[in-house]
Length: 461
Ligand SMILES: [Zn+2]
Image (cartoon, helix red, strand yellow):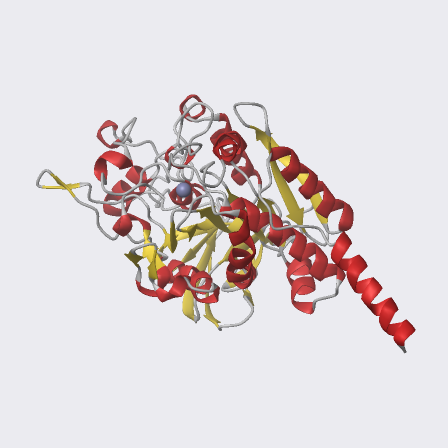
């Protein structure tokens, strides 16, 4: 018996000795090693890829989890997490590395919840969108005095103020008519953005992402679009106002799923601020132009929220385990949120896939489109909806569908080719969907005021 006990204790000791010290900050090389380590441990369900390079040539790596890595399976939604966009906000980076290790380990342990997630979802994890800024912040260490050191990329640009401003277009269109989704990029967009931003824009255009979160620090709150306030000035006074999207209720729910699954975010009082339920509309907190979450919503099918995860932007290493335990369930539950609403295929009469078909939900002025494989995903809260699929050259098809709280409802569309009309009774169609040219006066301004000048009392999160 004592021999058995001794073996047991030896094993325990051995396990303790070889168990990696995972709760640490990861510099760039360490981050890359960790991503490949996870890939080597779970080669059949992961893939490491780079979407491009930072100003200083560091790769923007993504670790993908899927039962078929590298392949989009029709009707299987794509989700992403982006961390460390502000180089000095480092918790997201560490949490995403933890998440990667957790997903791999639990899949190997046959944790049914994680197996189901990986088999039914394609998850893309980018721990750092700003590896250059991180190195600057990390060189200073956790007890830095400069609160903004490392925030920007190597060209000194705040990447969350660097995306094309599409809000100006959509606010105009909401009033005067025009596309409510997939708003076009300005012609000269590439010359206006940083390499990291350009890489991310190419990335989010090349996958049909449905759901996303962007991980930041400096507060503890789940922030949902719009970030940019509709009213900038009232009688010359700068003001910020709640600026909801047409999907406001859904966004609130997505934000609440995170805040309530989080250890303390939902309590509302954090870092000296109070946010009811631990969530906020971005613009009602402070208006921010050219941010990433508004861009995702206005240019792609992706619904993104911004998670502010720690008062301390660069928490000490000893805090990391507690933070991981506080965020783990929320990070998983948020991914699971992609499985709600409706999804399905858009096909023609010969069962060919129809890409870029438009799916409209009556009462919600924001359409989504089918992806390259003809599949679409429309996140919706439980309720009854009238849904229409349209594609150029086809008759629209409308169905009524009741969505429950559980799995998404499968709604396929089989569109019939329109019979050409002898007399041109229809009005002149838009010249290409989402390609509407705006009058000069509403062209987005080249540059918004810095957020710092708007909110001098607040250091941006
Ligand atoms: Zn931030």
